[in-house]
Image (tube, rainbow, N blue to C red; front, side):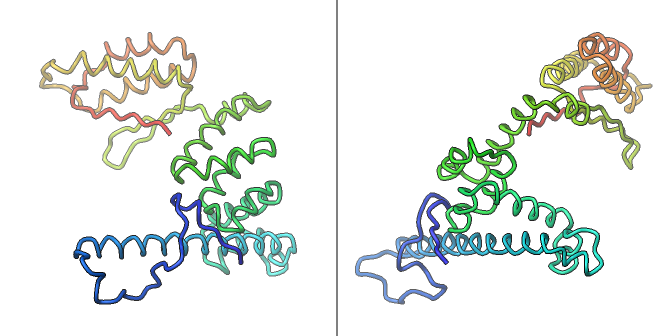
Amino acid sequence: MEIDSGVHGGGQAGPGAWSGQRPADDPPEGETASARAIRIGHDIGEEIAELAAHLDAATHRLLLAVRAFEDSGAWAAQGFQTCAGWLSWRVGWSIGVARERLRVARRLTELPLVDDALRRGELSYCKARAITRVATPAIEAALVEDARYTTGAQLETLCRKYASVQRAGSPDAEFDDLEDRYVRRRVRHNGMVMIEASLHAEEAEVVWEALTQLARARKHRPAASGDDPRAGAGAAETVGAAVAADPMAAADAAADAVAAADAPVARTRWRRRTR
């Protein structure tokens, strides 16, 4: 098996890597205890990178076997409705993991550069998985090259953002919008109400600005004795419903919600997260 761990962490596991055995007790002449600890730690780090490359190359072999097994239909002969169900039974993977492994295995047949890089251990499975979500033959080489100079987390972010651009320009963008754009209301176990919204960026800015202004306006206002701490949920629900029906009217709905809500919003924790 040909292994090249150069992509893992940007460094290649060179000869003489730590092999799980303690180094000689006598350090080189003049070497301090701290320098010796750093040297040993460096060797261990190189061994980690090399082992990770071997694991990724082995994962490639596993994916080849998984794809061949799915094509064979043997899983159906054993009474399973899907190959993912068989993998969950026989290998112990969750259904989600099994489906994702099958997806990556299929995509590797369409992406020879990714397939070869994973086979050689040059590309981690996590990076290969991210690339297979968005890669086309036209951009495959560029993404593999990007993988050489980014961390796994950075490449995940890059591919996720590129996927959003692909969706926006696809013929099914309007349908995808109907699936992805929503406002949901859920009552939690403690009686509080959770409002969850997935909106276009410009819509989210309108809603967020309205909530921010609401919080600022009430920050220094003393709470009345009859305040109901759950009343603020009605304000958020009003804003969310307005966005779902008419994004351009969201600001007006937010203003009405501010006037109607009695909860001390200054005590509410506002959280904003971007994926």
